[in-house]
Length: 47
Image (cartoon, rainbow, N blue to C red):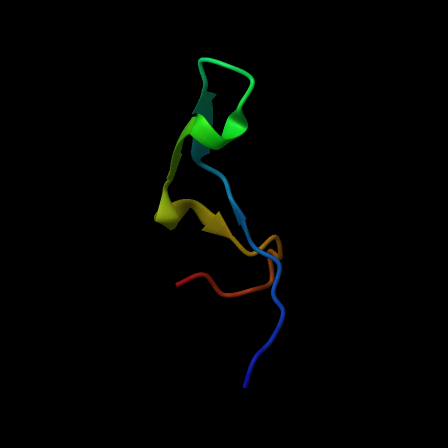
């Protein structure tokens, strides 16, 4: 069984570094805190 559930992370950041206009050579750093997930529904049980 599958269900669509809206979720959001409260703690995250991202940076993109490039030395020219070619985005194919850009470096992307991304971090998120998995424990900061929020169901955006206060009635949902958080485990």
